[in-house]
Length: 350
Ligand code: NAD
Ligand code: TYD
Image (cartoon, rainbow, N blue to C red; front, side, top):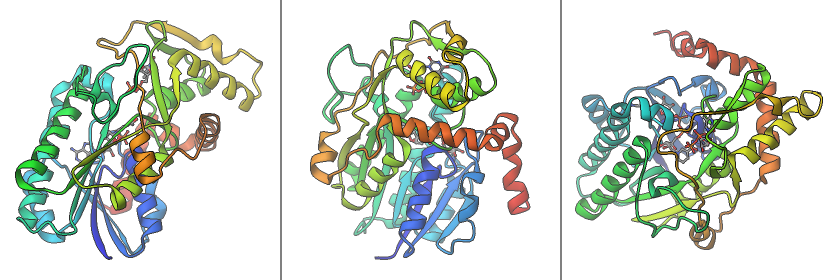
């Protein structure tokens, strides 16, 4: 079947892997990547796809209602895979309103445009909303988040994602809008902006800078290799049950401090450093306000219904990630200096 798919946030970390997977795997689909190219969007991630006949990049903001409505009128997207968001908890603490604008209002504008475009004729249509496990709040030492866990968000970021999830579900109930939602755990891998834990610490080790561990470092996250997330998204897009939520996770819990020590060890090996060199950079700093203690996903639903499980172990994924950042120091210095933001202008000449 031919499809006209709008992927939002495709120049970002996870979005770039999803766009690549869809463009390369489904030559019969037309993939439109809509991205505002905020600090987190980097078109260089996809520069090799620009000549693909089934791929189009569109620069635009999901909060611009007139623009989004016109875009739906022009292209009549039958499916949306919605990843565009403000995604960093620390930034949400500094500027919560920016998160409401993009994550809540932006999602609403897309939902309305999609609804109005198809009226009630939703046959073979799908609005796929990508969300996070952080909407469930925090776990104590034991237990896992399931699809039945109540929402209990603690940060402005997770509150904005929770709100957008609720609106998607509400449009399903109220207008029969066909949707699916996935809530995924922490991703890591190639193309991640060096503000999140793993790429920030890789970058700091390369530059011999302190590794700022928040609080006592005993916070726990469940880590998933980004390409495994993209594979899960492909599967849910094609085989997920409409009106359903699926949790996606890595079956891979790490306390921050243990993860950081493993990362230091692997970096020392790679850089031919004396053992213990990178660990000396660990610096305990003031904790993040409202810091969630532990996230861990029960991914048995997607495993049992759709046969998905992570294909890469954490050691393999982390090694691939470190190798990629070390092989792509130009990318890393480009994003830290801001140079990457001129790429769109150079490539598209405006
Ligand atoms: P990211 O910050 O790397 O990328 C976000 C992308 O959205 C960027 O390309 C940015 O330019 C674009 N964008 C931001 N505001 C926009 C706007 N107003 N209009 C159009 N485009 C805009 O984020 P990510 O880590 O790739 O996350 C993608 C999605 O997955 C988000 O919805 C996030 O909540 C969700 N998610 C992320 C993780 C994770 O660990 N990173 C885990 C689970 C779910
Ligand atoms: P992060 O990568 O920001 O993802 P999230 O907050 O969405 O889980 O952070 C992962 C964990 O690492 C989280 O417990 C906060 C912690 N952390 C630090 O200790 N130091 C840092 O500099 C950063 C960015 C995160």
